[in-house]
Amino acid sequence: GVYATTVGYKFASRHAAFAGFRYAGGLKLKGYDLLGNPTKDYKPYNWTIDFGYTYLIGNGFAAYATGSVIFSHLSKNATGGAFSVGASYQNSSMNFSGKPASLVLDAKVGAIGPKLDYGNGSKTSLPTHFAVGGALAVDVADKHQVAAAVSTRYIFQPSDFKTFMAGGGLEYTYDRMVSVRAGYEYGDNNLSHFTMGAGFKYHGLRLNGAYMLKTADAGSSYCTIGIGYDF
Image (cartoon, rainbow, N blue to C red; front, side, top):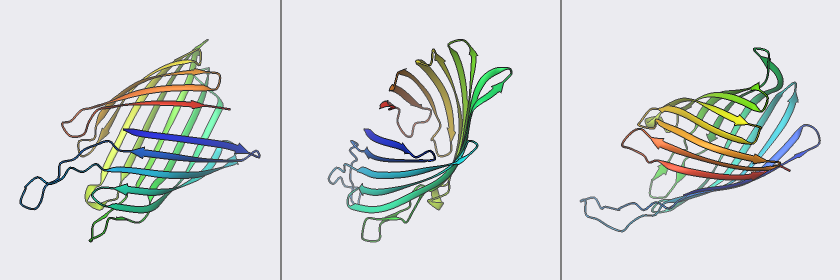
């Protein structure tokens, strides 16, 4: 399973900071020696401690940076670190075809850091990538909002597994409370998938669920559940 928790706080008028923890594990992999004979099973897992800071430049523009402490366990342990930098633009008071609308744009370079060293010459590169995307939400009628989002990502590390991904999605929200979503993402190396989900928001409470359906034999389909609260 994949588990994550995050807490954020805005201070002064232009600054915000957050801290979080992520854990991924639960798989069991068969082990084999050089002759193909079965050995012990392996149960890999990873966790990270994340920190971030955002500065509001003005006129909707912001810059941010994040850093992570990484612990990874395969057959042996490795520790390391990574950071990301990016910029965003947000306009919540625009019009689209005469309707109230909001626009968000974002670009970042992520997972920058040295290789994870598991010992005995076994090193693994982080999935360093460049990503850019945007989302447009339009209030098409009273209590009805439709949003569209597009994104693209290019993973250029490790160099022998460069991957391009691009996707889009649609969201419908009723009364700023109940949402349904659907999307598709194309990915090299059998990483393409469909997504669908739903969300509920009441005052500061947020509940979200999503299901990712694989479109290739490789990989797996999975479900994610999220809960949050805005103070």
